[in-house]
Image (cartoon, rainbow, N blue to C red; front, side, top):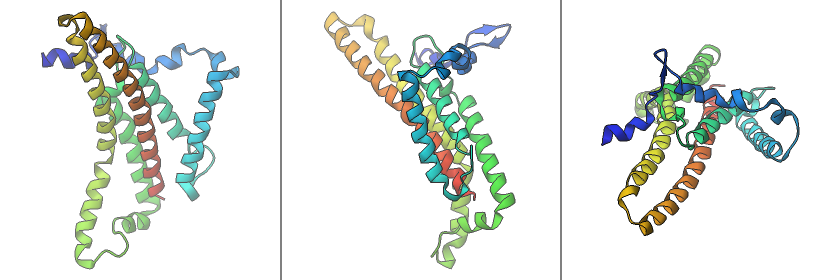
Length: 225
């Protein structure tokens, strides 16, 4: 039962021994019409409003480290993760953000670039950041150890947080839907209502997790300067 349950996350469709499920990751860039981004309409205005809000928030977090285009990478990350989270809510579409392969590919290079930039260009600030102001001398070695460990696990926590949240909701909906054939008509109707509510909840989770990974990446970037 458990192997069948988790098999919904397997990229099992193969073509010439290559998994083509990962194509869904870039599906938006392939099928969204070019005119959608150019001709102003209601959806474009809403999306543009969201991106402007994110730009202003990321700009505030970066503070003195902001320069033209520095928020673009975090806004792009938000858009990419949000699209893939929502795409996974549709039936028979592979959820790429439920795999550490993708989430680690996003978080690990970003973290490495932040750390390399910080230690090469601002190594004194990086050393100072390891010991909070007012720390007693006897606790300084422990604080350095704790801060080092917390820095090392950051890409893992970013990746696992996104993956775990995507897997949890999909598993819950799969478990509930698998009991449908054995229920009476009344319980099936109640199950449909619950599934709709879960779908709304998962849509909210998709938005929140996209925002969380983007905002945390912005905060990590601001710490190395």
